[in-house]
Amino acid sequence: MSSLLPNREQAIELLHKNHCPPQVINHCVAVADLALETAKILLVKGLKVNLELVEAGALLHDLGRSKNHTVDHGLVGAQMAKSIGLPESVINIIKRHVGGGITVEEAKRFGWPKDCYSPQTLEEKIVSYADKLINHSKRVPIELEIKRLQKENKVDAAERVRKLNEEITSLLGNKP
Image (cartoon, rainbow, N blue to C red; front, top):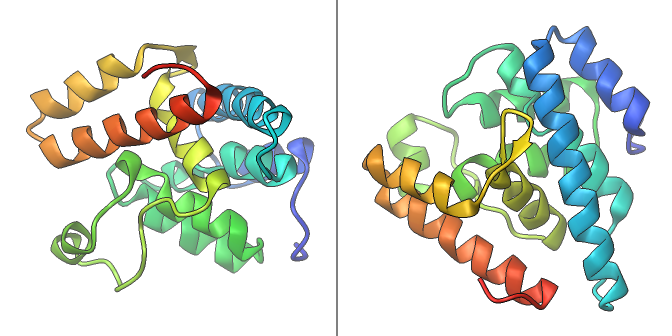
């Protein structure tokens, strides 16, 4: 694969080739649809957003779920994407989408390599945001994800998701 962004068909083919379960592929497509919808609104509002990157990153954000379904799937997916030769911008979306971002301390506790695991760019934030609003392949209120994280005693992650929701909804012109 070249350093060019894969289109929708190529990204879905990569998920199939890497043996992602059908329900994961359906989830990725739903996240991509919502992420694109969000990105297009932001584009109309005058923000600079790369729609192709949002689509490719959203479709491939759970590539690592072909190997495991733990918090590590973001790191595993990023490593897979790198070995396939995907662009750094897609690798970063995959690596940074989990839990609204993983802090340096959390990454250290997980035994991950020292790196940035929190969404930095607008495209990374849009994909992470859309992922939190899609449960399986259905859209759900962000409060459900926040409550789930709180119930699992992931208070910091719940707060990051809440802040990410606030940031994106304010950019969209909605109240969080």
